[in-house]
Length: 146
Image (tube, rainbow, N blue to C red; front, top):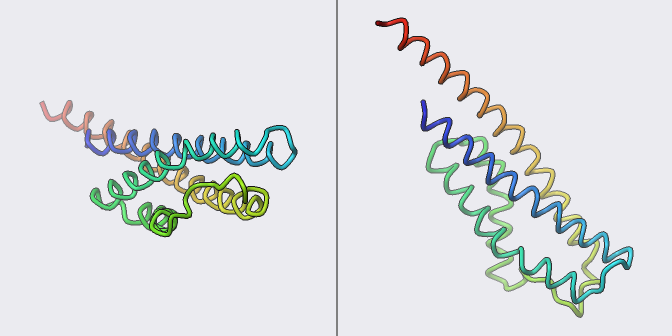
């Protein structure tokens, strides 16, 4: 049961990192839309986060698959597949010259991603609470068996 608790905490940390990264990217795109930041700086900030974001999402999906958390895996796999598709087609980075043309699409994509990460966050929190409860119950059973 200790492994379930450790995995739940790891899933929570990864999910919070992905959530924060996606939220930051939405803020940058909103600042760009309101003309608070120039397009070169916005593109460089977002492009610096994209590859670590893709890697972290892939690690989360592989961990969920390997540990048998099927429902959480099914929630995270659409984003992972979309990331793989973008990377294979070489459309994963934001182009400075076309940033205003794709601004609405990029914001919508990140909002959907934020929604899926929020759903995954709720599932991870539920799993964490369940793991904590199970570890306390197992500890009490071990204590009473002596």
